[in-house]
Image (cartoon, rainbow, N blue to C red; front, side, top):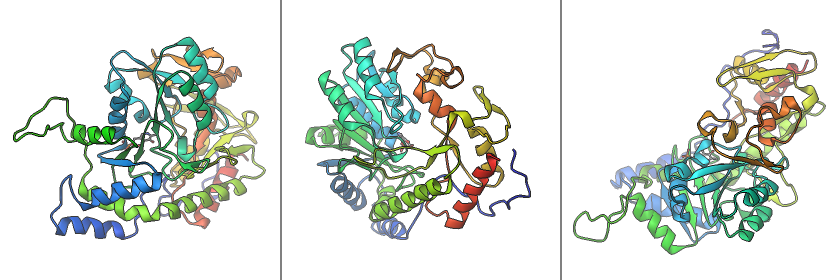
Length: 415
Ligand SMILES: Cc1ncc(COP(=O)(O)O)c(C=O)c1O
């Protein structure tokens, strides 16, 4: 760690990456469930939360489920992914985006990232259809609350007759051309995980316009009971339905979504202003067409301003250089001052578990690249962003003074 220990005081209270921000209504609706004894997976909170989310997103049905991952699992099943199917998936994302593909026996083919929004590159997707014609499913995520290039992605998928599953877990409330994310796939999902823009402590919802799909998801999520006087099962079932207590938290949070987005946006803008003059940029978005929810503010260090950094599978080393820094130094320094940053999601094609899966860049089959940044080939965009990027503390409750200190700590890393 380069910043001298006595230069700043440690934060007395940890500054979090993104922690739950409660308001009071959550407790009221949970208490309501308790008082009425709807302490299960049925009740008014679920109905009301589903209604409010479907209205906000602009879809006909929102089905309350236990987690975003469970929602993705049912979405992938509804989309028709079968054992042995290749599925084109976002590469630079949380593994939950594509794990459900594997649950169903599908084989993720990772599609490289573009630099304008840090989401799936439509040109790489087109390339993937050239290399693997006949693929029928695409799973896309909107990273850190920033909508991807939806028109281009949809056009490519349509041209090849593929179904899109949209993972809007991180981007609830973000819009592209005025339309809410979660609407751009044939099926979408959002997450209410504890670190998301609004939370239920856990929870997720599947989003669809199809009555049939919504009914299927409800049935599958409650162990696939048939309409019979006894426990009759004709399909595989899951215990994936949302709890009415969790739904109470979500119901209480939903009126605060726009307020949270405004706070997150202010955090992003304050960082952007505070880092002026440093050799860094913020996570980019298409200001013409999209309004992110600014869930996480991220930094990308200019290539020339990177000090030497080496990452193994579980640890990292760097060599301090004057005027330069790297994600490892900044993250370690923030942690030493009691503030939580994170590395960028490590791309899936770099993960040991997916080492044998295909990976496609806009130049073609990218499997076999080792270190795009160091080799300077610039082709493996996800790897490059992972090497040079990091997520900054982005908590709604962070004060302006705390954020200013974070900015100073980051600045000092470039001394
Ligand atoms: C991109 C993405 N997809 C899916 C998920 C899974 O959501 P959950 O944690 O609710 O299962 C998350 C977050 O956790 C996520 O960030």
